[in-house]
Length: 361
Image (cartoon, rainbow, N blue to C red):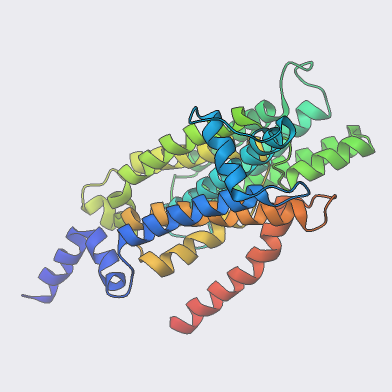
């Protein structure tokens, strides 16, 4: 077989070509998924027990089973409420946010062919911050609009601006990134302007805490909404797994393989933006999850997205469950914003990833 024929054969099946080098050393997919799922369930159960109130893992399982209609719990109403109404929604939302942000980061890095891309590269986080500040500080909506709703609308407006700018400038991947940077700076400036000119000290502290990421006070409604959005968006991303593998060879190669590059980019950008907007509106801006976790997952699975996306979601969920647990307990009774902890952990981890990439290149 000639060299051209071998090259064409590799490009004809991009997912196989991308995954082939990693399969020799990567664990089986079923083992990774089942092990990751068991570790996630154990992490959620143990994380719920950590806190001032003395609660055991059997107490957690008993309460969950009772609320799902499987038997009755002998715990007191107070302990039952701590588990079911306070800690369990928060821990589950941490898992959902970690999974969603990690998946968005994986898709963005592959779609834009940029290892530094993360869920906030489209300016969604900055737009959400502006929307939240407009509602909380300026009182837009007259109390009928919640902080989460304002953040969600702001995130969508920012993403719409990015799409408009990138389309006007030509629609290439570098134009998308530059448009996202422009939108990020614009909405960050608007947020700072509103806070400095209109917010009092208490409002400023509350807004700042939310901007750095906070899972305090969340309920089952946020868990249900974010879980539904995550499920839909994850299915869409998995359906485009082979297409994402094709993007590893560049847009021209993907187009040569029959991929509708413009349509695929719009679908996946809208999907990740919608998921990021939903997560940010519920939990604030939690950085570094979508930047670091995809690189860690690739070290286990290789670059084939059928294996990579589920493993990344599980890794992100487990990571943020424990980060949130640390954030709410390390300085008890004071709580540390989740985004601060992810940055403190994520920066050294990302430097390590960059060092390993440099040493292996």
